[in-house]
Length: 416
Image (cartoon, rainbow, N blue to C red):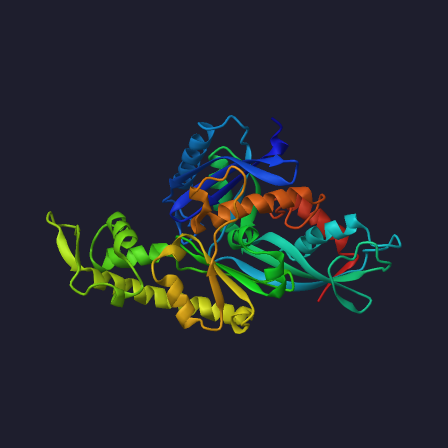
């Protein structure tokens, strides 16, 4: 089997690692062959804190995969998130484009790399450079300038960057596990591939991906991405609140959250009690379930307020016609969706389940796996596009190549 027929994606999360392996069908559709989900303790708030522990988690995930298929797994698309993620909506003038008399597809396909090279800054790694619109001879909002007669064009680009130390740690963990990083993919952007239609992106939409350590948000309008942010609050914080408040282990607190927690204390019988182990004591103690739910409600309110602020900042939160999709494992917390509806009344909100793909198990159809499934779709589209396409590769680690590229383009590229 040729490696080019196989797509591997790895969602390295704060609480779990999800690896999915698929084959391309007719070069257009992925068919899932195997997947695995294993615990992960090497990250905090989406960032790799222990490279070796994270690498061991990835190895464990790969061992499960390799026990189920003999397809070659040598490289992977890897999801990335964290509070270090940032974006810039740039405008660049590419004066050399179209010098042959007409704008060619090769020139348009080279735009992301040109923008990436010119926007590189110290301490930041460019993950994606996504052209959102082109301006030619005063004509704005052109989606595809191929074939137009013009010399030079202005391009608007959504550039997503990450802290280079965080990128290096994640890449080191993957390499230590025995794989090459084919490309890093912003996790909520990947989720959007599995959850949003082109019409929703055109009309206005946002993904709110509530994971173990972070809540990731991307917003779209006019068919293009316009906003990216990461809120460092996720399911981990809900569990940690229970653990610290009731002096119980994190594992016990996680089980209590999954079994008894809700953001609606009023829906729970005020007399209901649950047993829990307390650190330093041999006997279990009883606590009121409502107290657990009240604690979870307070954290939920904080998270919803932060999400609302970010959606307002993006412009989506003020648009009654825009669609907001909540997804990710933490979105399944009972009452959280209803809380979002109550406290973000201007938003049209729904829970997002990933599209069903051939070979997809029932487990992967849950919101917790939107990122992993979305990365498959991102990867397939990425590999169909011509060389030099959107987000094709990261160039920060190739400093010698980068320097030469910058020198070559400085003669014909200006930036506003």
